[in-house]
Length: 310
Image (cartoon, rainbow, N blue to C red; front, side, top):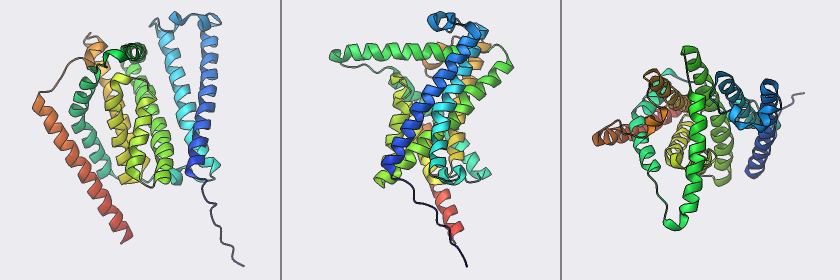
């Protein structure tokens, strides 16, 4: 007698979104508790009531912040999508599409990120100059304060004294967030929105909006929004999270590398985002090349799918 095993149907898209939200809240709580445990282990109870200990910039404080960053990212971003796949009784590799990457596509993603850097810089500079109407000044002041707090924390995390610190930053700030954020936003959220709306473009842009908004850095909202959309389209066309993770990693690693370069040359990190590094035509060329490469990626992946079907 032959038995045919049928995989159980997935839960509805709304249920999946609710599940991943619940898992993320649980992960945030677990990550926060673990981070507090690290602070207690290093500073004792003095560390809980004295924020200056963590923002002082000494080597111990920076190490504690980086450990906390890893714990938070792991518990809040990596664990929830894994739990969703396990709840659905699916292999993670199949559920999120970890298709074996091709060298040609990896190179193409690298070129997309390289060529899009100038235009993303222009979007970032324009975003930083955003001014709200007078009646929204209290909101703008709140947004500025949040931005300053985030910048202060970012500068602490990016602080490097040697090559070892640089490599740690690549791991903590570039690699782990790229894996975690692509898992939850593209793999979890975008996938569920695609099932919900039956429209991948709507799913990509809503996911990118959430991805940008959750960072609470309003004067970097639009470049992060466009980056999120770019990662979403890369995931859509290739069908594999590996390429989206690579693109995300390259973007983060570039920022870490720029910060390392500035510190090596005794240039304040705040100078990195305050000036333009390209003439106007450089931004135009970057935009044209980015559009061309995205279109080329779409055509190549479509042709590849056709070959596989044939």
